[in-house]
Length: 332
Image 1: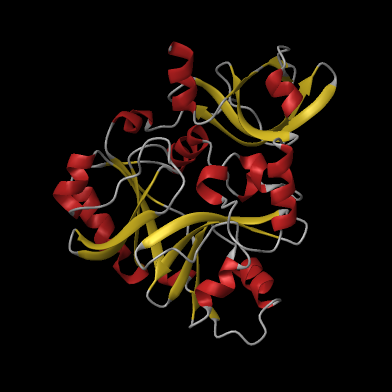
Image 2 (image 1 turned 60 degrees about the horizontal axis):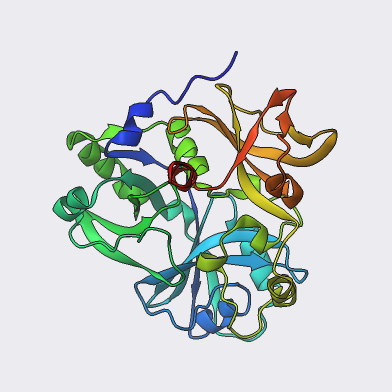
């Protein structure tokens, strides 16, 4: 039986909130923390001042992605915010290269609870004060985050379009999470389900670890402007990133796969005639499209060609991400 559309699909047209699964919070602190991490990420950390953040990839020596993270500059160093379960692999990766630098790492994931709030600017201004918003299109550069009292709870608030426009990532001490839940509920905001949140992420084209299989290259994920600095100094994996930049193209791209009124199944192959050109890595029923939607790294020949792919024997089509932009371009 096909999964229903997200039970709270109406939240996509309203202000809403959701508690997120425990995110990775790996703290790098010490006099050399920023300089040390700058050697292992595609982002440029040196220009950041406390209160600024940027996306960045961590890659191995061959340029293959280990993690896509948000790096927040704090007075003590760098807070690495990433999807759940990445604290240990990131810590081990970085410690492998740690010799004498004044930097220490601490897994603070259990100490912080993250919430997502999708709200218009007026709601944010009324309840959280001046919080930096994410401009449309997300030009290259850093994003600000701020400390504010939200419902009387001390919070770190970061504007994000990871789950679509108008999003706020709100981090509070785990001990204060229930107080924030009570306040959010009392404001009358709709509470989104896990399915709603995942649908919002997939529509935005934001890759989670499941969408980044082994040997994925940073440029394949389409986040060059927000996560890669092509002018910074040397870092692990830079040779591969620079070579791809010089060539001007990659062989695969992260795209959306649309299928009628059914959701694709994670793990299904995407076929062009009889040739496998990709595999579904995330899937949902998209409230915006009113159709099944999946994420996949697909060979560029499938994206550029006119032939229609199939998934599990059913006709499918490829759309650019985020879905909102694809709809705007189609109607223009």
